[in-house]
Image 1 (tube, each protein chain N blue to C red):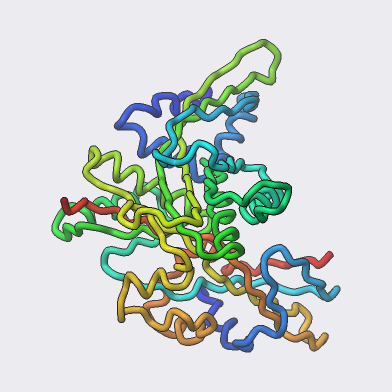
Image 2 (cartoon, one colour; image 1 turned 180 degrees about the vertical axis):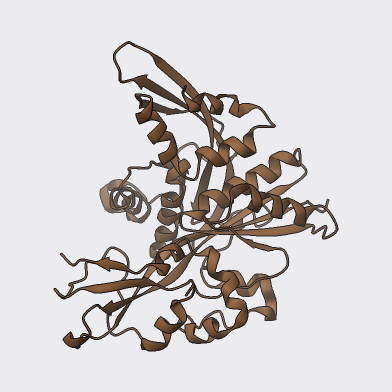
Length: 231
Length: 151
């Protein structure tokens, strides 16, 4: 039978931990199951939810980042809107932009915000996390018109970047230019030379450093060298 | 052995040899073959209440670890969950799970950042006298403070 059925009671409080973890980190098992049982995902719709930033001006630009969105397209559009001069085509540059994305688009969403912060500078940031409901329609591939609708909850992120100051007491607020200051601020004197980016020899020789191994999602590949072919 | 990286970083010059490229730039490559080794991210602070999420450890184990830090003997009022790259999703997921289990008692405050990562390119053929190269690239990261509001 189709294992995906197990994901259906996702909304139930008790099952979420397990099933979300099973569905989220790698949608590939789902896809494989889909293949094995002859089902294919044909539609994915996000359920509407209220804006995580109440009190925002209605005209604010919302960039919805999807899994397949190209960063250059998103950034080309958003940067143009944020940077346009008042004299330019009569439209003043926007003061605020929101990047939202869910599921596998979360990383891309953060990357967009990070790029914009770096390019524009002086931006105040507010980050909000929550679950978002997603409806997926799976269609049978083996003839017949069997169709399944699956409700899943996926993590989603919304990042508000603003040229105007935001409430610093709001959870998830980040003042401008915290790219490197993030750690000093929180740790005080505890931080071991955060600016020294290339002092890797030292860190590796420290006995503690191995504990940091797991945080690298790349470290998997470190173990087996990967041959890179140049084009 | 389990840790080939320490050797790697020892044999490679610490300064990138004019090979650092920002994201998006295309780099002209030599036709010869290189082995790409990704170094570990630079060292970040590790307090008792810091949790670095990865994609190797079982999700439930990592969630349980966070839960244990928040209640039980340790009883931290706040923990900090970090995720880099692919692990961002999982970090968010864990934070939201913790919040859901706490029935609204816990709050989340997320910050994002960019982490510079270093790759080493080692020539496969030692006779070709190719120089080992390093390349830096950026990856996004998230830092989620999970805390009981003091009020």
